[in-house]
Length: 111
Length: 112
Image (tube, rainbow over all chains, first blue to last red; front, side):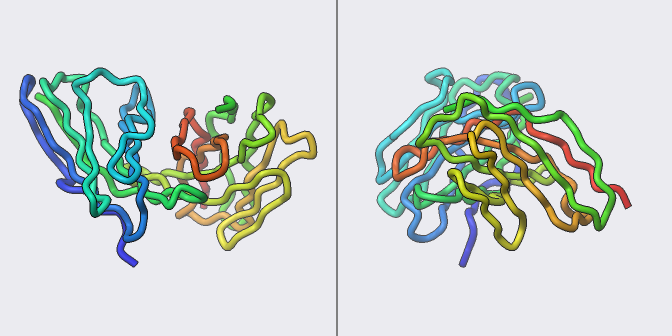
């Protein structure tokens, strides 16, 4: 079966801009989570969506937001980009019971 | 979720067993031990999880102590492709929110 697909794979944005990242989960998975990975802070949980509702949220400012569509696809948005938002953004999908499947990530560079 | 403690790094000779320890002394009765690994710049990959019994799958074995305060992930015959950062994570089981709290993990280097 197809894995978790994240688009785009690489992105370069300028400070102050906004960006939208997309994640297509494995078919049948209703839970989609987002993580940010930086060299300094490691892997940090951003938020989780389940059946189009945000079920959990990490400790990130309101500039980070997300949504989930009826087909379980999810997007995350970062507004007013800062240099510190440069990171690998990872999406994971799961049925919610056992293992989570991660995508290859979107590498965001803010200049 | 309970906090975990892992060594920063470990080396293992190719073909030998890699034993990666993890301490989770504050684990609760309904918390499972999960192991994920991340090969450089890729998304994390699930390896195995367990509650209190030892578990084995095609990738690894998980040994959990009787008091559940620590566990060991065993890769029986390490290969160069097993070089990665290994994360031990504790989370509440069941169908609730699926949030993984990653620590710094153990960087395993498999040496030829």
